[in-house]
Image 1 (cartoon, rainbow, N blue to C red):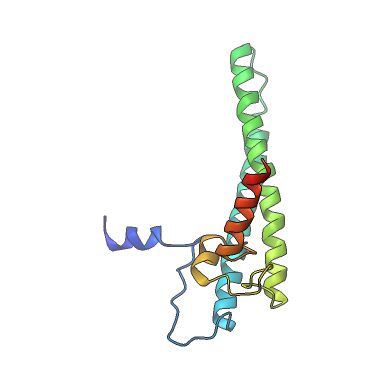
Image 2: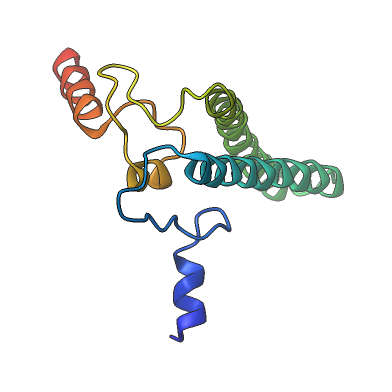
Length: 145
């Protein structure tokens, strides 16, 4: 594997990871722009997938005479629609996160108010909780089951 392949693996929705500078203020304009770019690129990728699905469904709207072929096509479409529904919900979450970025409310834990962290936000750009609060949430959820 060459270095070009390796750097492509590190991209976050087509964007290079943020390179923090020494003593850089958290959620400074450069970081805010970085995360807005990630969110917008992610949203655009999802919208392109939706468009591809619509075209695929229009193109494959064939009434197969064979019941097995028809059942297979219906199963494929059902899975595709389920994926698109999950992506629709994700699109809404991305849009809400972009609003948080625009309102200078991004990057801080909703529960305790501390920094969520650059690397966590790059791994999950829609994160609203720091690692500690998210872990506590998951423990509580497991205890409820």
